[in-house]
Length: 184
Image 1: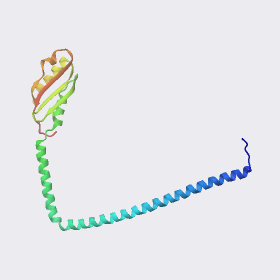
Image 2 (image 1 turned 120 degrees about the vertical axis):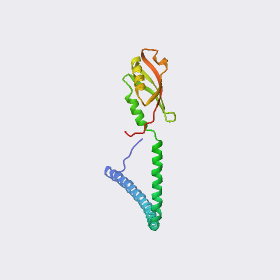
Image 3 (image 1 turned 180 degrees about the vertical axis):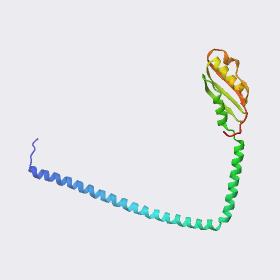
Image 4 (image 1 turned 30 degrees about the vertical axis):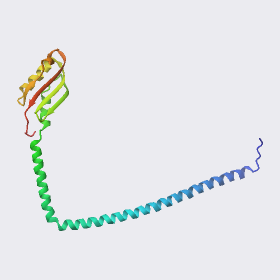
């Protein structure tokens, strides 16, 4: 295959530059066209948004006028609504069991070497079920005694099978607690 260079190198580079310039010019023209359409699109959206804002401002003004004319009636309604909310809150608080007090007192009763794997608190029966692990039998007996000596706990029940081994005891304890209503 024979290659003939009919153009001198200077003309060849000039042609390459002209081709590159033509590509850059067409890229610039395409970019300008795209930007023009984007500008037209955004201007249309701007017009729509302005119309929506004007509409909302009109609605707000009319709502303010209506609220000013019925302010006396709405104030009575707001007061009665607020009073009913306070009454509902008061009733809810009277029925509410302060779990934090129960859990805080229980946490204070747990000696070293006792860990819980399951804790169930029942508001309906005011009972607690705990499953866990004790490092030694003495730790479990100590925990049971602490629960029995607490005046807020009653009916403490630990199955005798929980005491079969001396170390690494799996246990289950159930007991009842008294509802506490004082603030801490």
